[in-house]
Image 1 (cartoon, rainbow, N blue to C red):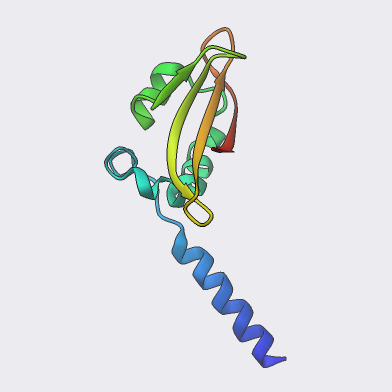
Image 2: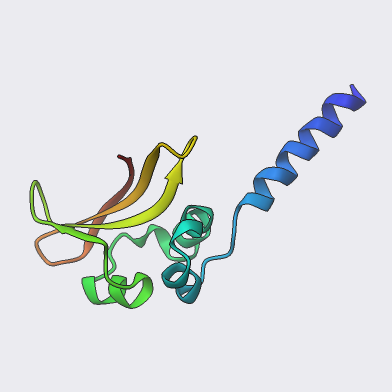
Length: 108
């Protein structure tokens, strides 16, 4: 029983250690560590939903990619996913008023 508790605490500690605090400076300067900041970013910034295009650019910088099909989207690189085979991407979808409507993580 004690062993399970200790292992659970160690796993929780490792999960917490893998997350980093979001700062706009860190986000723009170290693209490979963005995935570790993602949870903090979404919690601090109320999931980004409702933010304007200008607010997003001020917070995250210019996106790596802008899409207009199937909807207006900004794509931000988050780093390598899994075993380093795929890239993970933060995709922000905007409504017709250029406010963030939703976000998702995509793997390419």
